[in-house]
Image (cartoon, rainbow, N blue to C red):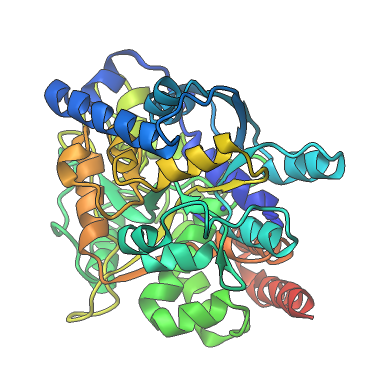
Length: 458
């Protein structure tokens, strides 16, 4: 979920949270999520080294690169491992600075005349704003643009393009809003293919005195983002891609029937104590990374959880004994009605350069290469944004399954949260929290977000 004028701070924090997910120590759980494929991994690493050498023009450039991003802990270790072949081949030392508020740090650094060399940002909206301000380096003549257009989804390149010029490349892609469950306890449709099926199963559970859902919206300054992700999925699923696009572009009022319906469908779960573990108070106070633990408890607190593709590996790393597929699995968010195709929402981090140097040019060429995708896939954490990345490059079963879902989808949209102006995104998150706290305030909540939309457009 989806990332500030992110510039858009909330969303950077939002994905920061979602991607920083762990603090979940390593230990046996982490090992259980990963399959060892040494021959494939060594081959992929060798190919990445060769790509890095080519990106550097066959020279050992040396020097340093400062990269600002949102990760920490085990996920940062995994992230940096994908750049190890680049550092080894080029002699460039990559130094990462992690923060939960990319927007604030960037604005301070830029105002002080000391921007980082590179940024890895979950907010496409902030990156577009920075490009429009002339802060980022255009990549059109720095990478093989024709190859990039061949290898990366057009929608992701469009998000990184401002006034006809390309200013960024996506490091990864993530599938948001998957329906998670514990196969040992789940006895519903496998999978639920329509919202009606999913709602019927949830109603059946509630009628039996079993709480269907767990949910948690707490995430520090970005609190509310998991609910916002659920709402945007419902806008896309219930009202279709055309309405979703108009909404993201600021052309569809927040008071419209399409947006209201999505909020109400979301609210039917998270404001009803019979439908969600702990009721709305727990939804508001439980952190996003703790809420899914109820799925895998010995006595389940719930049977369903809507969250992005990181959740399964998070649980396997943080809850002793939890094994992917055996104890935690997912299916895609269902379609609105029979015969309709499922629609996916994705998110990811965009890489951009503030400095035009031999080091940044080599770095961006390396990221653009097909050999980099398997390095991302091999972390076991993310889907490689490059379409040339093969499914065999994924080293965890859940990551591979998410990559299959991503590759097979025909209706895909980038998360609305990370595409909206900062003021709109912040109002969105506040509206989610306000609505869960007081369901009768929906009209007022939507009106306030719509006011932010109109102000951002003026």
